[in-house]
Length: 376
Image (cartoon, rainbow, N blue to C red; front, side, top):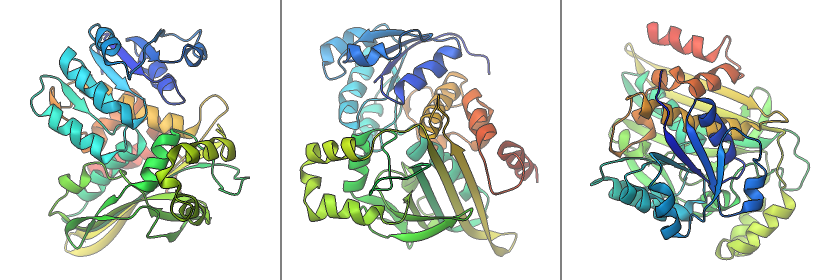
């Protein structure tokens, strides 16, 4: 997909933002990575994009910065995204973010209703790529009974009591462990508590537990309303993790003291590049007059230079930017992740990378298998 060069701002120079900036710069765009911390930006010295000190919480400074940008990608904590989206609307800057926060997405949806630019929140992995896969799974049946989506971003070698290492935003992690979770049950959208619904899952010989977390379904509850009887999203972790997190957040009340919880996770679950991302989507429905089950199982392994969660989140976001620039998404207003078909998603540079680098228990290459299924 040939694209003209754009001025693109990436806000947030953390583990994901810097990777997004690099991917976009490699495609020929004029990218500026901005962060409130000059020290954090210093970690990106020598990259092929510019850097600039901008505090995303300072709306006046942000307004001056975004006036020069055609697209902004927020890789900031979710609580900054309302202000960023508001300024994007004022400056006529197309907007993407990585938020899992349901309330923030609802605010952006209302903001987008009367805007002349495009707003695509919830890019990345979950929500993000998983929503594209979930919509694809629903499309494989004449009528859909059940869709289950399970995603885990995990250390390859768990060594601490939590059996977990933080590989993305600590604020986002705490948020999804605390807020109500949307599912579809018996045809109706309902809210269920986070950290509940624990179930055992065995994937490729590895035992995991899965439990409710907030935001992973994105807007699929709306998109598939009336089309699926039961649909859920759960996070995959190694067994025992949910019980410890319930003790900390609920038993000790740290859901109401997130700063203390943040310090605990910083100390107890340090960042690692030796991580793995597991994606497991199953669907049950009627096809050609009989009930059938289908599945998508993908795994990504981190490398020293690029963690698995960095790859999947950044590539999922950049693929949506590519689709927008190629005219495959609405030019303005609110955009859902599932507005992108899986075939279009995989045709982008970064989407095709996700297909190539996936390991799967199913035989053959993911992209090739998908193409053959669609042809059939």
